[in-house]
Image 1 (cartoon, rainbow, N blue to C red):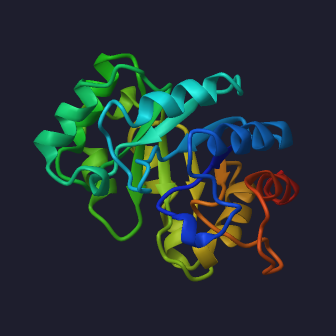
Image 2 (tube, rainbow, N blue to C red; image 1 turned 135 degrees about the horizontal axis):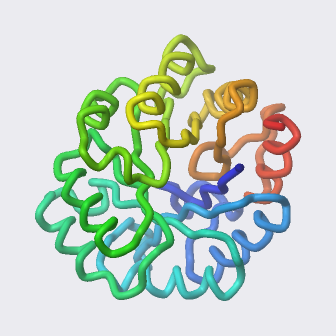
Length: 234
């Protein structure tokens, strides 16, 4: 499985290849799926370019994506979109359009409550376990662990993969026997992606994680990143 992560925390300042609007996101997603992506992860944004969890923000993005692709579509619930844990939970409860799955970062305050609410509403949960955080330990002790869709193991070191990348996959995956999607970011993106391939793990690629191809050239689209990822992951 290669998931495409369309935009992340990027903004229009990162270049025209980064999709931002409800019109650009489905086009980019459709191209990435045609290139071989098997699921889509997106950060719905306000017109000003900010991640928000208010139901009026993800709903039009989800509707537009589902009109163009026939693969699972997931969104973020990151604390940066709503820092207050109680308010974040309330936002998720107020969603009118539900994604197929949502990532929940287990080191963030309120993660268990948000994950439980998503599961109760029939939304799959990607348990985000970041290197260098308490997420793996907390997830190992979580009663929700066996119910998550998969573990999203994130190597957050932007440098080419080191020891953390080797240690991270085993920690959360062994805790509850859930599938692991392993990925890096920025300079660590391509080394970690190749590692995921060697370990037989799912991975992801897209402009959320990197703007560059393996040879250092600027990527023109998410689809191009997916094509390069499949050539190196399989």
